[in-house]
Length: 307
Image 1 (cartoon, helix red, strand yellow):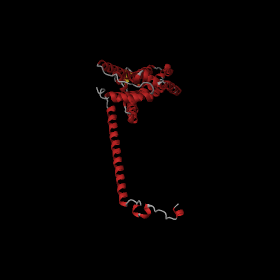
Image 2: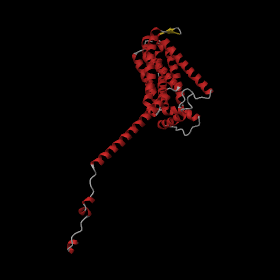
Image 3: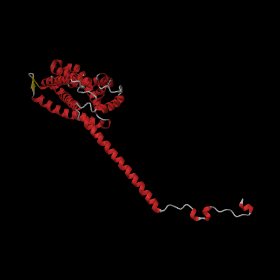
Image 4: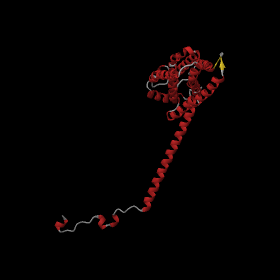
């Protein structure tokens, strides 16, 4: 339009006034901004590391407080005794059957098949059994089944050796009930961040310490021991039956004394303690729901469960 009217076009401010143009930032300013950003990033990282360290310390303290509870220590000791008892059967029953009773290797194989078959339905309905019976009843029923089983072994004779197959379903009851209750008990007692460590404690007590002690003590007794006028495997399984019955009796007596004193039984879970204290809500049904209930009840009953 200016050209058509014969006038010169207007100049832009930046054309007539070079000082008004946007000049690039000075290098010093860029260096200062970068240094500030790096400092802020380092500070944020330090705060995050401090938070992680604090959280790890709190989790470690919560694991220690859970693992050192008297009831949990008793639970691990009881699982070690059950592991010892299992080993006495697993390692030496076939020696007893073949060498002392004249049984066949086929009979030993059939017995393994029978006891494994009876484990399957108990594991399948484990969640329902946990809700119905609870940890304590399942462990006591496991010990009772074991005592009946090994007492039955001690009664076998060469002409009744095949009656072994009638005793083997009790192994399914013993193993499946005790292991299901033990795993769920660890979930109940140990914080979620330390579940793997909790299972390590359980396996160390039951399958490391218990199995080692059972192998050493059972093998030595089988070779040199004598009890109730018998020796060898018959004496070993009579002693095992009496020891299992004694553990049941001790467990029941201590539980009754605790209840008489108004306290929770030996294998009381945090969820049961919360229920006794009237704490709501409690999550019931399903392993995931139980786990949430464990976490909430564990926090609320930590102080009141130190008797």
